[in-house]
Length: 157
Figure 1 (cartoon, rainbow, N blue to C red):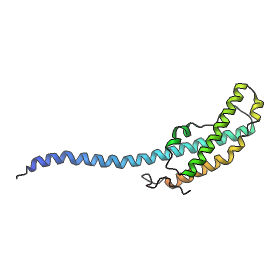
Figure 2: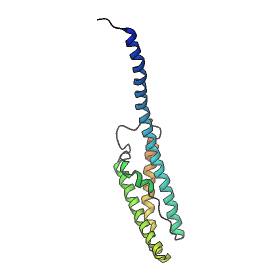
Figure 3: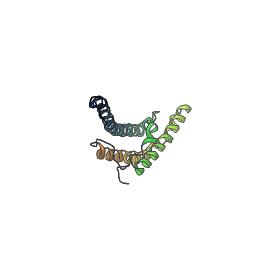
Figure 4: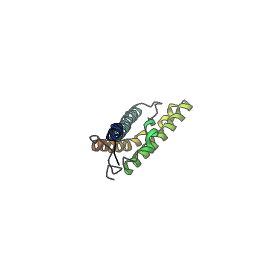
């Protein structure tokens, strides 16, 4: 059996770059996934910051501004990497915020500032602070990682 080394060399000259490209893609995909996760967490932190400012402003002067929940709505089903206890804290925080948004919408429809007086937004203070702290801890633990952690939920419960 004779091997045609020229043919084998031609085939390998095509296969080796393809194999390198596939390996490179797999490596880059893991890094991109970690960057996406960090971006989602940073977005949630920014949203919580804005909600804390809205809450403080609402305590000083009633206003018809709603709490921000868009980031949470977009990503809540994909946050399995942050840990169960932090997810539960975020879920309850945003549930309270959604309730306030409904009350604010009702006040807006009633065109009644007195309706706003009954809204106790200070109930959001502790949940927002806990959510922010948990997200910042997760971010600090994971910001220098190049790829997602193997054990899902890198924050201990």
